[in-house]
Image (cartoon, rainbow, N blue to C red; front, side):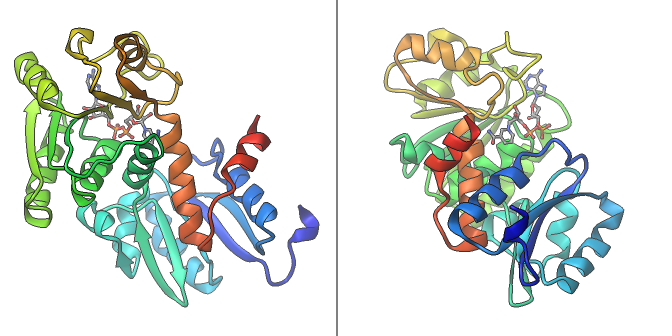
Length: 287
Ligand code: NAD
């Protein structure tokens, strides 16, 4: 690895806090080395107040690109030169690419989610969807579903601080993607949820429920599952949530959250390098 880095090596990095646990440096450095690309990827622990200085550094060091994580995704969207359509609607970005001094911010959680459905043979175009949640992952997915041509996005969230974000997403999508019908209802309204699931092609959990330590919880009663329903989870720990296991028992196509994580990286890699991420080799490297 050290021999690979020279006086011309281009820098990419993750910014946010905490970043020490991140798998991104290992993932991207493995791929740069595999593809013989003269780049190195680091992680820097920075807070929101330091972000203007981060952008000065990105420009000063002519960094090729990188990622932003919590709590820096929103401020990053204010500091980039341009935003992708999804990042503009959401007002946050988790990826930046520097093309000859012009820094573009992207948000790829939703793109990675939709790509993972696609590789599992599920096309969202024209589909009726139910999305549980209104936090970061849920909002990115809702926006991407609408941008990619889903016909309906029925958002359900509990009555907490995220609920108003769902209403704001609905308003923004009404302006940007008027052909997609977006509704917002309370997750506590079991009748409305049952009606929406009965009407849907794809049901998605993008809340923290199902994730450790809530692994015994599922938000959709198994009796609502039917064989022609696609059930997808964003949660990847555990790899198969209670919801995914119950969907499999009924015979639904059930898609866990691990692929979303992988495909975000795949999408980011192609934004940074213009190349396809070496998926099989990386999976062997991880094993
Ligand atoms: P967030 O904190 O932004 O949002 C949390 C969401 O959970 C909100 O909608 C909130 O209302 C909901 N929630 C909280 N307590 C609840 C309860 N008791 N019942 C029902 N809903 C409840 O979180 P986030 O960053 O959007 O993450 C949400 C999920 O998405 C997590 O499980 C995370 O693991 C997953 N995620 C997966 C990937 C991936 O690549 N697979 C990427 C990002 C996030």
